[in-house]
Image 1 (spheres, one colour):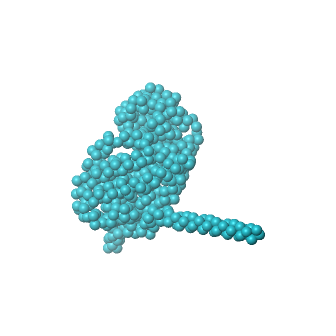
Image 2: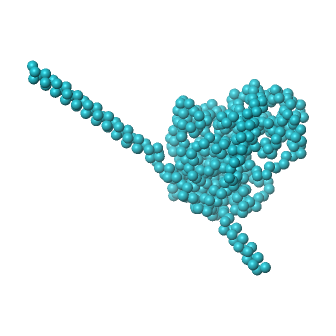
Image 3: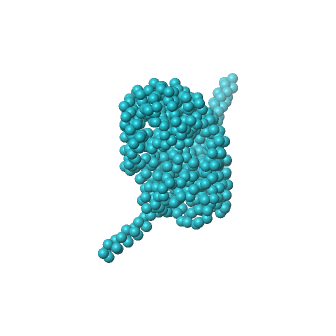
Length: 523
């Protein structure tokens, strides 16, 4: 009996030794963004780690080892930001307008985090954390949390790789095949696209240190008065230990990453898919000709579209009257070409459970990265109606990989959408390619969530994992791109050409002079 008690004590002590205290700040008022970080923190909590999550969302059911700090101002400020900026119009602006507007939106996001009384009260209680996770989205001021708690920081990107994340760890951005976030390009660009893409990156290279970083520095000093004695935000950015990317090679295109930039796209996908409700299950089981699932994400509902765009979507199903339709919307939707028994409208669907059903033949989506990841995982072809940000790129990649067709929102009409739907449903290659890419995505040694959890614990265990850090983050711009080396080589070439010209001129002059002298002697 004593031996058994001793064994139990050892187990408890061992659990305490490997348990870490982790803080995550997920300030974005988007459920899709939140789900990524939440699932990671939930997984760590279930493993026995003590986690705290700062976010605009609240859990309905408490989770063991999972504490929450609610950002009470986030929704009010977020609604004002959305009302102030028409993000759909971003599709038609130039890269400099897009960049500056994003900087402004980032300031709003920081404001609802910094102004939260709950968050400020939380900071007053001095605690120790082994690692801090911050969602990286135009909110660099929050990286100061690492300095405040003297803990390593992990960046989490819901968008995948962008300049905001690659610069943190020294991952190279090659404009020749890495599209700038706002440019609707893939990795296959022509000359003019590469030129425009290069200008986009170069503009942000200039704008970030001149416009963005100084403003973020002021916000950090407002949140942490002691920050005036800290290293600059630019230096704090260079000390980020690791970046987790919500993407995977099968979703995007192959590109080089620093060793501390890890792809973990698909963390939100459940190990065991929840069963459908009896109503939805019966609706899909009886869909003899298959079904189409329609969801434009958590931020956009059909009835909030203009009447023109709304009609374009509901009239696009006319060529397929026998295919059942599931639509995520807050109000009932009547499709003229379908009987009401073949249309199911709900305010919320368990999207993964829907996509896992064998009767689903097509997913009509806005092209967000979470939806794209899930449709790839479950091997369903897509028709995308991208609105903004990375959605266009995700859908262009779906076209490039031949598992989907894109109908950009600004070009949306019933004819174009109907044509895209018919093309995907009638051409079996789209479904076959979706299955092929699904097999590639699933062929991983660990699940994305297990991979992410491993690296979080690796950073905590290794006190920031400095052995993964690339020296690229410390090199000034001219050294990183060898501008001084090229300047030296170019100067040497110019000098050699200059000397060669001079030598040639002197030689020619001497020859001319010698011949002239010989002629005078003969005379």
